[in-house]
Image (cartoon, rainbow, N blue to C red; front, side, top):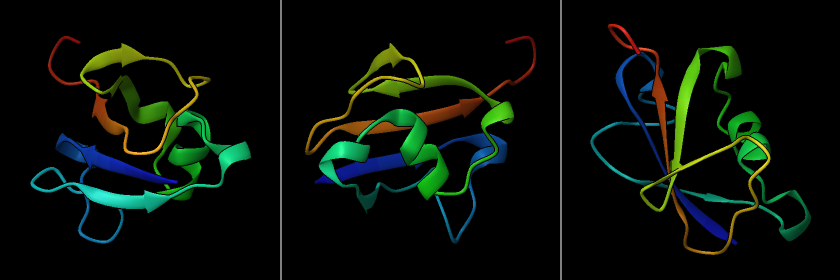
Amino acid sequence: MKINVKCFASLSTDDTCRHDQLRSITLGGDSATVGNLIKQVRLPEEEIATVFVNGRRSGIDSRLSDGDRVAFVPAVGGM
């Protein structure tokens, strides 16, 4: 299944996850969780303050579906 990912601020890098465009990531059905997506795009989990799935706050254990949009946000200035 395809998951669309964006990373913001310090989590944004050119080779794994960007802030200015969606990146499409393929996950297997059994591994389709936010936590496994974090591992696949090689993000430092301890630096992620908020996760949004389809515009709604979500958690690490949340299951993902084909076509979901996931955004990762680090702690920034008082978050």
